[in-house]
Image (cartoon, rainbow, N blue to C red):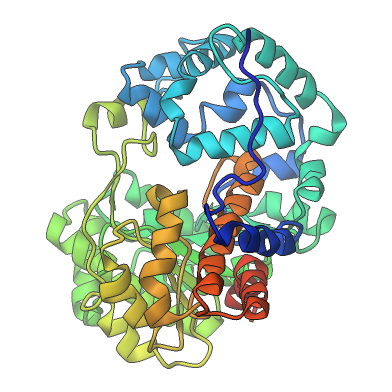
Length: 468
């Protein structure tokens, strides 16, 4: 007999005396619109508004939370349809889906299980849990749903109550899709400026990207000063297209400026293909400072999420390319690393920095004290490996006493998996309801204050962090 899929109405809410209070708090936020200012959904999804392809390519292949778990249990990446550099695909979508369903138990206790159950039950209307026996049935049911007009991407924006969603776009992107969306859905789908590939001078293909940057910006990037000017022009193009923020994913949070002569020397060496690893790292830190300076000028919110060693396995990277789930957190230092930026811009009117981390040991030691004193800093929501029930709860416990609630950004999801967005917001709202309910029953917070804080965490803080 197939197992029923029935997410519990009290899932992720606290047990005991606090549960009833948490229910009331969650009920007050569950229907608020969603603000998705840190998103990574492909902009083409909304620009073309085509029907989703199939269950595997929608729910398994692009979701690194899902694929990394299956790979960790010995499932070969080819059997999961991970896109290969050579363009060869060795698994059919239905077979990929069967691999996933037959290992559904692997996701017990993980946030992926929570999100997927929410997607299956509340978005797709399924009532049977995945398993080897139900895989084909579910594949056919989901395929039928995806063919319906109300499951097109733009229709789901309305159904999910997504007020604004950002995409993450390379600094060299032509923004053509965003021009179309600005006409079709004004202010609804906006770009985010991501210059990472252009500031790491030792990455393969950097010279070609620098040339492309110059072409996009109609600027000569053969010199360091021309390169800076091209980045400024591209930022302005993004702002004109509706962008509110930039996004920076460096290994280190170090943001130390170089003298112009040193930056010019390193840039010129990169143009010749002779840059050293140490010089490239110094230039990347220098460019973090430069990006902060540009944000202070143009008002784009600077989002920084350091501390992940990407593409940890060289053979996976060589075969499948970057960003295939083999990314591992590293210890990250913020206090000294960000001091140059905060000395210059920590009290600067018009500057805003949102800090994310996957090193939760820094929450109470560094990040909460930084956000608790610098008016230009907000703490981003728990991100990547920490956007889990206990991870979000620990975040509140570790930062609130020092930074309060109002030095955080509120919840902004961080995902490529479009259908999971409502589940992620719902989980965050449940965890915050539980945390606030605990303060209420301990008489550390009045219930009416808890209701107001819950509304702010779910909606208002994100809005005031990014729209100023």
